[in-house]
Image (tube, rainbow, N blue to C red; front, side):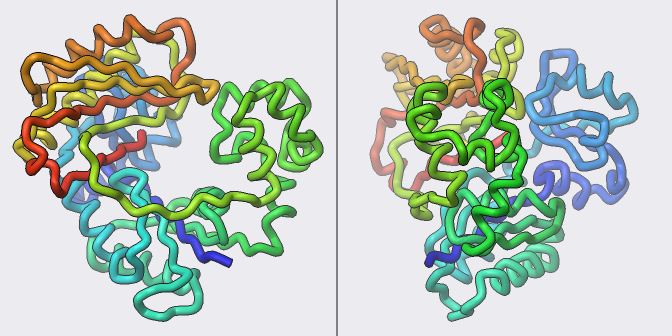
Length: 356
């Protein structure tokens, strides 16, 4: 039986801003763009979340919900440095680390560097070290597969830990509200509720054929996870020939102005990373995942390599015309750059994912 830990830094960007500026502690902090220029919320502190503010929300809306909130411009270079510190601590325990974003990672500690038999002990040690060495908190989930570890890390946020043991898994999942299942988005949740699927037990009572009929191939995923089945391995980053950012949205969106605003934020985030690496790419790719989990990419190869946000935005906006954006709700947006001039420039690069 594998021992998997999912670690999720608490309100990562906002927590760093509060750490670095003590006057922000205890205040509702929003990390995002200019509200007068269609800026969107990257993340916000737990104090701000009490007002209904969430990632990918227009900053103008967030300020309206909480006029006393402090709006801070993102400092992605700082966040990336802190992310490296976070992953370096994890690497003291195992090589099997799968980062999902700057602030989130899976660890397989079935066999680990310190020969600690308990994954829970390892998770607690990592939590303690992150607090003492970085000055931040992290929530942890421990279980025997990635799906359950991911769910567990959300149970006692912030700065908590939860363990789901094999003998507890199915009973735990039977009582879990369907909207709490990782991988069940807002639209799928509504469809399930309409079908009378309110919790894990209701889902478990539906046969595979029925789930595939209503949800397509993701129905097989739902059929397995409610039974505690997830065979995906923890897969460390491999060398990639592209460099990108993508955002999983808190809510599925249809509004084209908001879609373009979020893509603009991604491109502005990507530019300094490319320039820091001194790399440019000739191919710009737009990635979209719709509410029904169908994923598409649209790419354009240019005559010259690019690394600026403006150039990426121009191409991505054109690529939007070849998608169902504005007609079909979207749950994920991403931009990547590839087809680099020199392969040597990419020898040590990873694609970094930033989940909003």
